[in-house]
Picture (cartoon, helix red, strand yellow):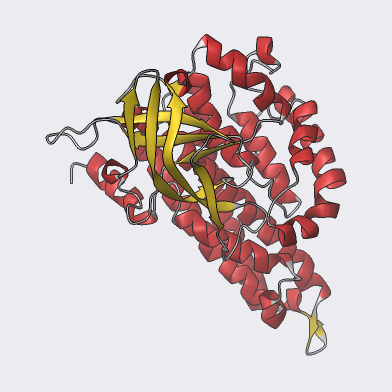
Amino acid sequence: MRRDLFTQDHEAFRELARDFIEKHVVPEYPKWEKAGRMPREVFAHLGSLGMLGVAIPEEYGGGGTDDYRYNVVLQEEAARALVTLSTVRTQLEVILPYFLHYTNDEQRARWFPGMAAGTLLTAIAMTEPGTGSDLAGMRTTAVRDGEDYILNGAKTFITGGIQADLVIVVARTSTDPDNRRAGLTLLVVEDGMPGFERGRELDKMGCKVQDTAELSFTDVRVPVANRLGEEGEAFRYLGHNLAQERLTVAVGSVAQARSALAATIDYVKGRNVFGSPVASFQNTKFELAAVSTEIEAAQCLLDKAVAEHVEGVLSAADAARTKLFCTEMQARVIDRCLQLFGGYGYMMEYPIARLYTDARVARIYAGTSEVMKMIIAKSLGL
């Protein structure tokens, strides 16, 4: 269906992204999957083209355009080429907003040039062993000691944790028996700080090109100058960005479902069974027609949500509805597409197998489908 979400500037950015991905990502992607990450020099290359600093103010080497649609374009073009851009999505869409909203002038001057250039890589450490979605239950602590905080704790499932130069750590700085959400603070831990250790690099089912790590902090002295925003306000800050984080997952889900359909159409047209192309069978036509319809329905919902987010009016409940519908759609679509590949769909040499394993986490991270339903139910007064 016709989309009216993007301007000419977005389409020019799309051409730049498409050219970069085709020339510099697709040929190297199998090596990166085996290595478990995208090389640092590729981040720097993206930075040199201005693709990592679109939202960063111009005085720090960025583009000065905080327009979420550029992030959407980048995800769509990666999915179109049947690849992902490692932790770029997480850095731009999940982590960068915290720096944009809560840094002071000194911090911006210290960090933004490297982030725009792709030479400072970032991660955010929220999840702890045993806490999952219960952010208010985290046990990592930070105790004020003069001009430092003494940080102790452990984090897990940290996307980009192995390569990150800056890690935003959510830590408890005080306890309020009447309000579990109060007393959380955002601290930026820098690579090389004594007591900061990277643990296991976790072996995942999918998303092989982005590293996921366990991190530990033992008496790490973090300067007060590395605190983001006010002490004790982290839960509010985290909630402010959750709508975009969930929207980001939905964008990837729709784009990857669309790529799965395109790959499947190509396959069934060229694959012969019982003397006829698989595409000629009525079941194939009906399955792919249904898949296409689901994708278009999700795209309409998603584009509306993106437009509302750009306007600053997207509600938490509508972000949850969008993530729930799009990620569940992705699961159904890619499963049905893989079925049409037959046994070849189970082989990792075919992209549909990777799309299948990559898709599974979409219904878990940034809030599970069950959490999305809780948010939506609450908005209904239930």
